[in-house]
Length: 76
Image 1 (spheres, rainbow, N blue to C red):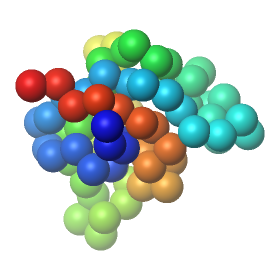
Image 2: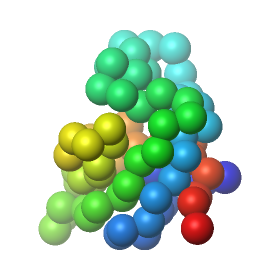
Image 3: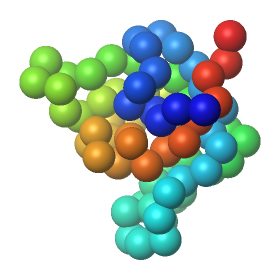
């Protein structure tokens, strides 16, 4: 298991859990980061933050600190 920000560009993972019980964790869940959902890591911005990913057919940019809170199991 790893975190979303540790995936390689083009790599997919299944979300295992979101760390934390604060507003940021709630916001991530509202955006579709829920356990069991697949997420694809697309790329990182030139200065390293934010990271862009695809989930439920939507492309979303999240800060690296937020991506580190998303625990994923790499697929493939």
